[in-house]
Length: 257
Image 1 (cartoon, rainbow, N blue to C red):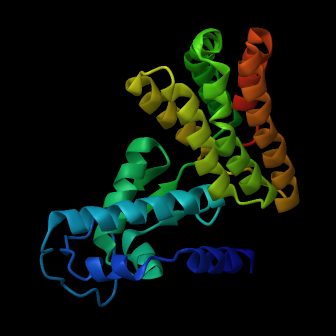
Image 2 (spheres, rainbow, N blue to C red; image 1 turned 120 degrees about the vertical axis):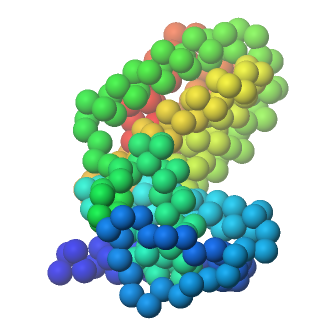
Image 3 (spheres, rainbow, N blue to C red; image 1 turned 90 degrees about the horizontal axis):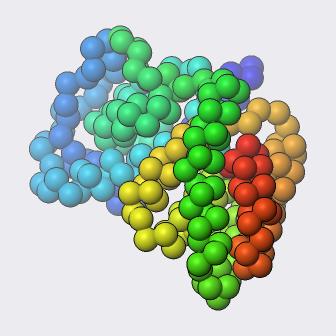
């Protein structure tokens, strides 16, 4: 019964814009990965433009990431590209390509003859990610606290507020995006785009397994996590290096990270 409800949840959560479905109708069909099976999958004509195919794949990738963060794709479960394609209303091709990207990010792993299994993160792995993020970001934020004018930090308040709104609504996927947007904007003030990309990859990896337990409990954790964004901005404005360091380390170990 619970498994059926879980599948119904992610089926309802997967919604793809009509333009994606239209573009997918022009997508090229590629051979199934070894062992993947589907019934009655039509052979589609080659895409007119590669950019259309990439657009579909990108939107499917975004939708899959939201499903992972939101809990519609359960850790430990195996999903095939054809089956997910049916849920999205698209062919298996862009789903398979998106899943391969997620595999490189560590969110899923390829299961021969079956599809893709959603990665199950251990508490140790999450702790290691938090430690690496702290090693990279804490020194940068301390340097920025000494050099960035208060007015620049104030410009980031709308991003902190956006994360608070998402947290208050208990929207895990929306909060994950808002959280990464806030941290990305902070680190972007360093002027080091390589740093921003590496930090964002680590951040995304730390968000993959979802917090289990009651939704109300998760919402409370997210609200507390979002409040740390505002507190961090205040500490940065005040150039309080001790508070900045403490907040960043605690934040990485929190609900949203």
